[in-house]
Image: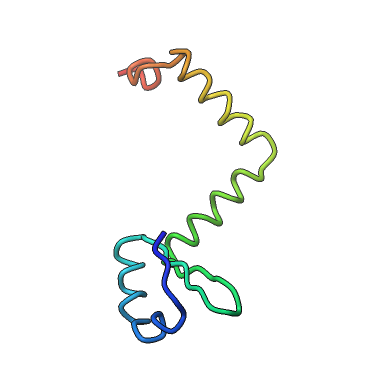
Length: 84
């Protein structure tokens, strides 16, 4: 993540907004008051959606099981899944 001071962010705010939206790269903005993150709305909404999914009971356990299955080669081909 790119880090920029609040003073520099103020001077280049519109450019930072355009770049964050276009490249999906967040910016950490630092000041004496603390740190904050500038990111595109699309990325923020995606992050919130991911957090909501992972907080649903059973979803995270299912993801972990799936990763173990993949690592052990227990997978299905597209034709097995879709009958093609």
